[in-house]
Each structure stands twice: as structure tokens, then as C-alpha cells.
Length: 325
Image (cartoon, rainbow, N blue to C red):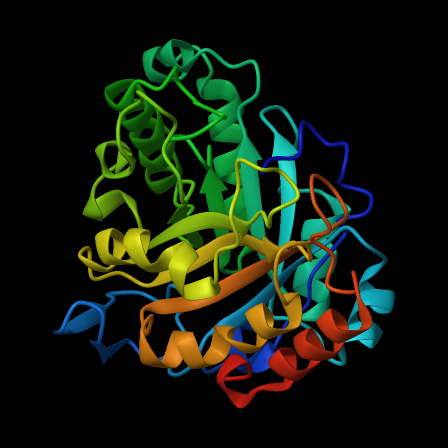
């Protein structure tokens, strides 16, 4: 689920923060390491870090894409300020100086920058032809001086097909960008790698695009319950939607972010779908340490207030202590 270019940047001036979760705002970042029992894997996995990568010491961060109202309107609607704000930018957009990024930091939100390389030849990234743009973004990111999430070329395994569904080319481009950022001292960037929950037919599988442990801080996934308004789709519960990909991501032993998620209304109870999220995170998906709701009426009725029952369920979830670590 992508937003082409900058068309949604205005409505997505976005999401909200738990200032206690950001080192810059509270002065006490998340613990350097902790262990979580992964029930789905039957293994005790270590989430260890040599630096702060925004992992909460307990529970999970709630994030939001603001597409159904302003930040103030949405926060009032759901009864809280989310911790993470999702925004979308094209290849040449300067997200390091954007008003949304700077407002997020000023208001205590953690930016989740989704950097979309539309109309970019990945061979040009790998060859160094586009290094001027990459260096400029790296320098701008470093100058921000605070931690934030960067999700470059998400959903590479599905419709977007960044790099032409060529895993080797995608990985080379991702690593090239990452290496320039590190070389230029932009170590405040927290690297999120977010494939789609579904692979494109006859295309390489999800994990073949994985850039490598030293290049990824958080693994992630984008996924939606599309409902049954289209006869080719069936209703998927929260657990059903993410169970298979969770096993693959959890094997890496890294924190997991759901970079985009939402449910339609048609085919089941959206309120019950939302009500199931926190219990499922606790019992089956303990490595999911952040989740971001795609709040907009787009291909489906993804917005949290698509019905009174949906909004009530979302407000309940947003207040749950597990999502307020």
C-alpha cells in the first residue's frame, strides 16, 4: 500500500508520540537489551543492541498514518497521541527538512520515513550515479540529531517491485544507501526493512530480499485484511494475516514493526479484529514492538472511524497499557 510521490504529505503531517519513549525527549532511552519468549517459535530470542534503536523495554509502540483528519482531530478521536508518525516521500523529496519531520520531533513523535524510489533505476543507485542525493539525505539525517525510523523501498516483494523484482539488485542498492549514511555519520537512522505480507505471483520470495543482519535494525511487514467486498479475497483475522510472515521475520531475532496495517469492514467485525490485536501480540507475536495503522479511506475503508464500533475498539486498543510502554 503505497502513496505515490508526495500526494498525501499534506494530510499526513502526522503521528504522535510518547515522549517517554524517545531518548531525545525523556533522556532515558529503551534498555540496551532484553529477552522475549517467542511463543510461535518456541524459542527464547534475544533482542540485543549496541545502540539505541527505539525498542521499548516492554510492550509495543503505536503508530499512525494521518489520512482521515489532522493530527489534532485524529488524536482527539482516538483519545491519545500515538508514538510513531508515518509519512511518505519520493526519491528527490527532502524529508530531512520537511515540516512534518521537524514537527514530529518538536512534538515528541518518532518519524517513520517511508522513502519511495519511484522512477529510479536501481542500477543508478548501485553505480553511484545518484550518490549526490544520497549524501544530501545522509547529511540532513545526521543534522536532525535524533533517532527516527527510515523504511527505504518497502514492499519490494509485491506490487511495487522496486529494482524489478531482482533481489540481488535490491540488496545492492539498499546496502549502498545504508553504507553512505553510516560513512557520513548518520547513525541516528534506525533502519526498518518492510516487505509486503504477500509475495507477488511467480516472483522471488520475501526473505530473498533481506539486506542482511548488519544492514537492518528492525524487520517489518505491511499487511491488510481486505475483507470480502472482492470475491477473490476472504476475511483474515489479525493472527491469520501475520502468522506466516511472523515466523520468517522472528527467525532473525530482531524487533519487528508492522509498517502499515488496517482492516476493512466488509466480511466480518472490524471492531473484533481490532480488539484481538493486543492479546495476539502478547500471546503469539512478542517480537512485534511497533505497529502503524493506515488511517485513510482508500482501496477499502481503512480509517479507524469507518464505523462507531470500529472507532470505539480502536480507542480501547490505543489506551491499552501494552501500547503505552
